[in-house]
Length: 85
Image (cartoon, rainbow, N blue to C red; front, side, top):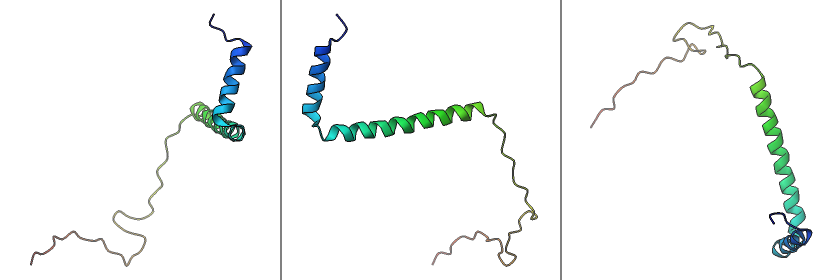
């Protein structure tokens, strides 16, 4: 009683063609195929990310002393309060 017979599937197909038109159905199928392909590749990437051991990022060594910038002409800006008139 819960299964659909071939006649039910034929009626559903006819209704879909009538509602969406025969021109839009190939475009919709193409878009659905692209979306599924992208989804599949993203799921595969997530599984690959889980399989790889996570290594903590190594901080880059700072060759300059603390407070020194790469440009020796640049000095550290000091915060001053604006003067009221």
